[in-house]
Image 1 (cartoon, rainbow, N blue to C red):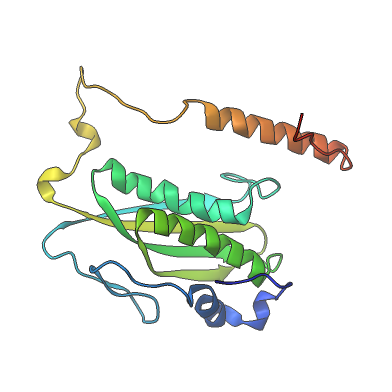
Image 2 (tube, rainbow, N blue to C red):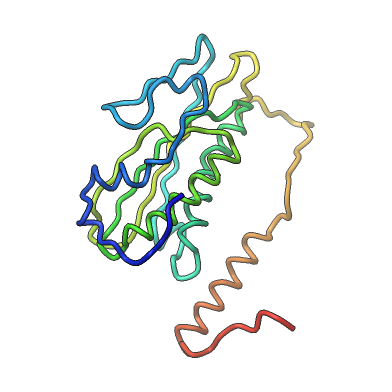
Length: 203
């Protein structure tokens, strides 16, 4: 497990050194993951099943605000929004690739936090990290996850299969995420106007 002990500049590791550092504890657990990180490309064997692929990109200032979103939470969310698309097709997620663009505003320790969230989500969904890419950004942070899953052809579910009279089921509290976002935005506005103000968390 990686431990945060200070601030390490990204330039001290370089791109390949950073990738090696962040992925050194990744273990391949799915039989279909033949080759993961460490070569020019990943190798995946689905033995006759259908491959299901989904990609989502999250951009700072558009999809998340690091003023109140911890990097660990961002890493978890980045994986979750992708594997949810695989589940929605009635497939089983097996692998992901992780790509991000980052500025020198972030340290190695900050990206360790990001990967901590990524690996927590991977453990929960039983998926392997098998590749990705890193690049430099002038400002801000962008992360893109590609999720890969498998399914039997006759078990896949498509959007156009829905018809009038079907039962729609949802989980969780509808609207809760939106209300939570409104609260966070309100607290951010108050903080920007009066940086010394702190929320009362007990009562």
